[in-house]
Amino acid sequence: MAISGTLRKTVSDMQGITEASWRAGVESGELIGLIAWAGTRMAGYCFADRSTGEIMVLALLPEDEGHGLGRLLLSQVVETLRHLGRQTLFLSCSSDPKVRSYGFYRHLGWVHDGGTDEAGD
Image (tube, rainbow, N blue to C red; front, side, top):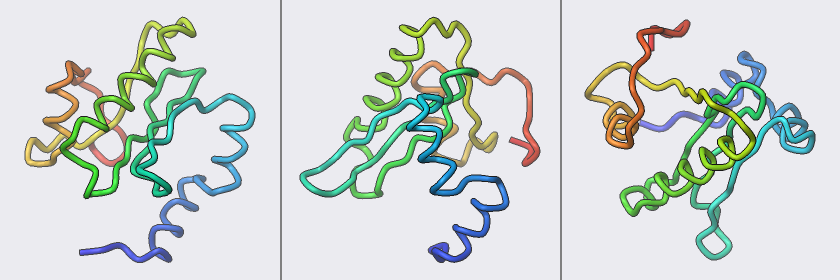
């Protein structure tokens, strides 16, 4: 099932995530991250909040999953945050073991801190 661009945009806007706000965060240096390219096609990206140490997003196109690209992007962003002096890093993902992100992050050594967000994750 696909999510329409309109729905995706509406949900993002409700959360305050807009192209303009994202661009401002990157340009100000508040958001740090990397974009991976496969030729001229964006394959994935990972961004974090410099001031909080939160991994904000790690996303790959389906055809680019399973080749280590997500692990590489995440590890490089984590390394950058550590270099900037961040001691504590965190991210949010589903608490459902059936969801791929659950196993992915735990496989890489991330642990659940016992907290939950508004979505119950």
